Length: 278
Image 1 (cartoon, rainbow, N blue to C red):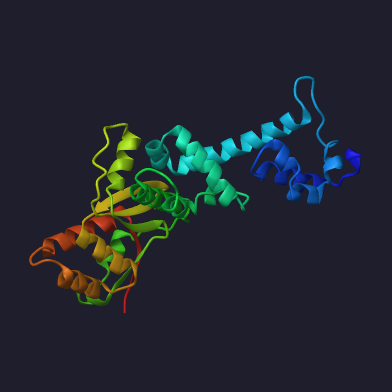
Image 2 (spheres, rainbow, N blue to C red):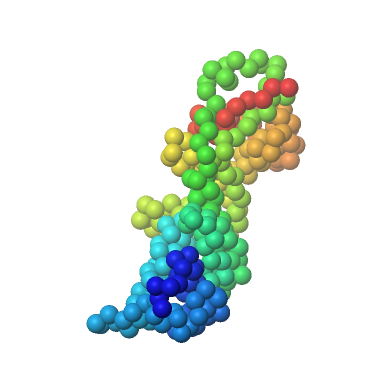
């Protein structure tokens, strides 16, 4: 009888039925579900209503679970959803969650494997979509990171001039530095603004994503600015980072005034949390 089944078994059975791919009948008869409650006994767990069979009632929960997952992924990947269109995105989500089901109490990490999944998926403009998904994952990761206080102006002022060459700048936790082969940041901004989309032709771009006071920002970077910020974020001293960028840049491309301007913008934007002196 239904009342003789332990609650924890019923919960695991319901989870198995909801998360198993296929039709409602296939999910109820699946090996995972029957490991908790055998099929004959499961027929008594959910009773029919006046208008729905027992299987149809279970199907409501299965359908709503997939809708909830789709909503979560669309929230994290609005650019990808917009580019692919509603029907293609819905099918992609169904295939993705079958391959990468939610394993956490929170849906925040549901889309962690989405970019890599898209990399091999049969979608139009796959390389562009892959880059776009990588950007949106970076945004999600920065949003979910712990809040760390940015470097205060007085900390900058207290560093002796002669110490800057060996100083190391530590970025805040909510910081991601990304490089792409397509202009995905401009495309994502056009989706958010509801404006005409820019060209999506191949073009190397670089973006810093960071959060300050719980507000997310995306900073488009040039090649040399990205190289400098990447070196600093990797733990290089300011002197070594500047030297490596200038050595690898085209002649006269990186002027001293550019370096100072980038540094001021990054500090003012709250990208760094502290200065470590030798």
